[in-house]
Length: 324
Image 1: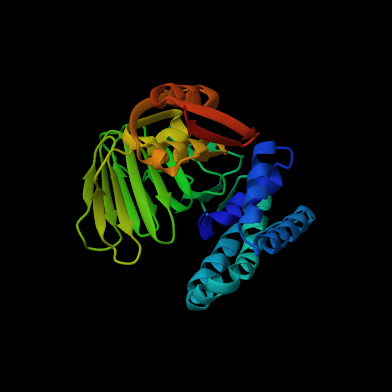
Image 2 (image 1 turned 90 degrees about the horizontal axis):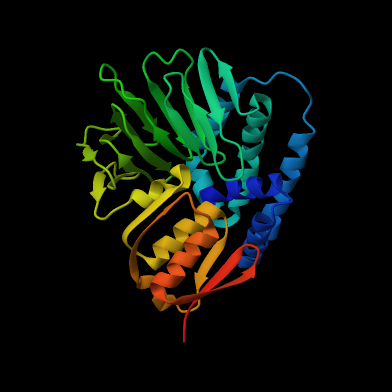
């Protein structure tokens, strides 16, 4: 798990204490590193403090401005902090995010702008004023103007899948970290991180640009492009990436993908741990499509395709083995 994913993961676990799968994942994560229990306690303290916040107005715009300024002004120092005690820096920033989420109860409006903070355990959804739909991973932050005259949104952090209503007269634009996307009517997935922003297309056509003068790329169904945060380079990746959209549209399609990629994708979607007893199995390629089916149904298909045995060792962990 990447460091920037830890806050969302912990908050999701704290918000669902009765979710056995999440609690098992949390237990596994705690055992991965001796520093993790201390990290959890920092977030648990902040989470409990946020629950006791008084009922008073909170200035959303000022809160986000302060958060952004802190991130920018302290960037060199934070690089060092993350290398050693990164959770202390996270503890400084997290209260702003928690208070913003508490005050807004999903979203807040300030000066004609709407800031939406995704909730839920697996995904959240939002319908924009033009009828376009957005599915968001928990903790994802989306911002747009209330009037929506320009059909433009800003993905400030996280991951989102867009289903855009077609409008020949007006393009739909998304700005993200170091990247921009232009479309007429299509569906695609955007994932942001401190290192890169990538876009995978489900259908239609997307133009991906960086926030510089370097040339962009045109993306079509199953293709993916990436903007490097450090170099500003935009590249179109080789391969088929339609599976990157499956977490949102419940249609997970793999075209000659490795079993490792398949298991990692299903693990992320269903919030479980899927692992192979023999890591050599992970290099085997398969082509398969899972549309609106359960995890057990998906595992049954994989079992038959590769002649495997699937053992469930806990409520949130499965081991795949070759049949003898």
